[in-house]
Image (cartoon, rainbow, N blue to C red; front, side, top):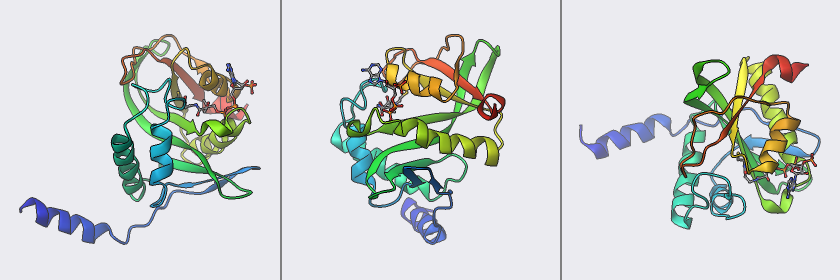
Length: 203
Ligand SMILES: CC(C)(COP(=O)(O)OP(=O)(O)OC[C@H]1O[C@@H](n2cnc3c(N)ncnc32)[C@H](O)[C@@H]1OP(=O)(O)O)[C@@H](O)C(=O)NCCC(=O)NCCS
């Protein structure tokens, strides 16, 4: 089978596949699946120097950010448990950020003395909306889903030590810092490993 034929079959098989991830509503926010039309918003976040200051190698080029945003939206049609949710203000539908659960493999957790094969919590918000508690509110809805619906035993998160805002969000969500992990992000920076157990989340 040549490549063009293979692509044709994939497209016709999945054209009717609609996103199935749940939508969450919190007092101020609505979290929904990433969908066509969100490309510019996602690419703008990944291209923003302030948002990306502590992530990987920093802001992406407009071309790389758009490519990644399009891939993300395409993949949203096929994802269920591990998903990226767009966060909108309920009052006017403005997109303000995203929260995701992703599978994260191969990080050594010294406390547990094992290679972690965990689900990771990630988030990015537009700078104009920082400092109003939106990240913990949105991440809280996703963690409810992770522990109550997906029945995960724990969720992990990574943040660079100097990313004090993100570290504070994790503290507020009751994540505990683990002993130093060996994980380095794509920019080569050492990241701190945090973990939240289902028990701590429910307590
Ligand atoms: C990290 C991020 C998601 C936080 O979102 P948020 O909605 O602003 O979170 P909060 O409103 O709860 O604020 C977080 C804390 O940062 C603190 N903070 C704000 N500015 C700060 C500063 N200059 N120095 C230290 N702490 C600061 C706030 O005091 C707040 O803690 P508090 O509620 O105890 O007062 C947001 O800053 C962001 O999107 N950053 C860029 C992307 C990113 O780094 N993602 C995480 C990668 S690990």
